[in-house]
Structure formats: C-alpha cells, structure tokens
Image 1 (tube, each protein chain N blue to C red):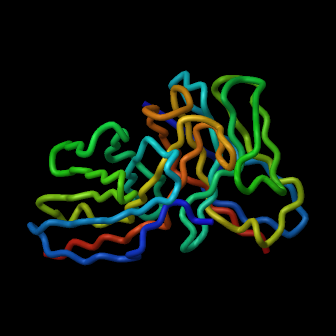
Image 2 (image 1 turned 90 degrees about the horizontal axis):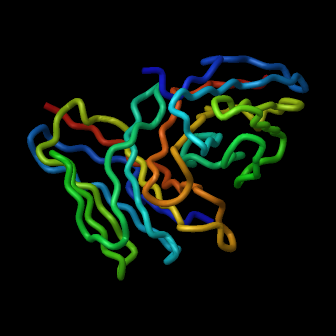
Length: 114
Length: 118
C-alpha cells in the first residue's frame, strides 16, 4: 500500500548544484503534481502533469524542470540550486484532474540549499 | 494574490469541545473544496471535501459547511481529541483551466494550527 513515494526525504545542496527529487505512485493515477511549502505560505504548485508525456507549469515553476515518461514516475529536477529553493517539496497524484478527484500527497522531501 | 485565506494561524481547544476552523475564498469559479490535515514531517492527508452544489458534508466527527454567497467554508470537529492536533489546510479547486488558474490545481490557504489540550 505504497501510495505516493518520494525520495530523498532530506537533502542538503550547495548553491549551483543540481539534483532530482523522485516521485512514484502505484495507484495508476493520471494526474501528478509537485508543490512546495514554505513557512506561512501554504502549498504552491510548481509543475503538474495530466498524463505520460504531458507536463505544464504551475504557479512557481522557475528553476525547476519535470518530465513524465511513465504514468508512475514524475521527477522534479533542480537545475542550479539557489537558497530560495530551500523548502519542503510534496509530490501529489490523483486519478484525474478536476473537482471531485481527491489529491493524495507523498510524505515530503526537505531540501536545504546552502 | 491569496485566493484562499485562513485568517487564524492557530486555534486552541479543550478536548471534548468543538473546533471550528474557518476559510474564505475570493474566486467565484471555485466549485470544490477540500480540507487537509498535516502532522509535522508528514505530507498532507485528505480529510473531507464538499462540492459547491452542497452546503454541508459530514464524515464522522468532521463536518464541512459551505456558504457560497459569503465565499466562506468552515470545518467543525466534534468532539475534539488530542490526536486532532495538527495543521489544517483549506484548499479550493476550479473546474477548468480558466484565466489565472491551472488544470486541477489546488489553491491552498496558509493553514491553521489546531491544538487540542486535555
């Protein structure tokens, strides 16, 4: 009963380094997305995908890349890490997009950029 | 531009009493609303939702009320238990990718920290 799995749970990066946050779901969900949570800010959408091969930008996409080669996986790439990207990242998925489709979240990835 | 607002960052309630968490929204296109609960170091977990065609939805101790004319919803927890202590996020979803929105996007409030004390 894995649901949405994110790795790594914790990561420290130096400014300018790149890395990939992994996300996988085993529920055959079409819709996947990445959010970041900053203190006092709620969750903000970074990128989303409505199916394999289809991605689009959310509210705060700058500095991040995504791809969706399979239904199960939706990795988030930080191209050149900056201290402003220090945050908690949540991957989420749902059966489809639109109202009535409950979105399920992973446990989060804590990223610190120094 | 915060389209979903939770104006109370914290709420403290005695065990057994009612907890009422409030949420306001500004976008009249929103037609589906959700509450998520989040414990420290965990991801948000879905709690309860309501469609805009309803004004109330109940699930055990949790009831969500929606007042569309006031663009306001609230989550009632009765009776409150210490295990309910968590951050509660209100979220809203629009039916389509209209201007300023994104397919399937959840618009989150900033959360309310609920503390239930014995």
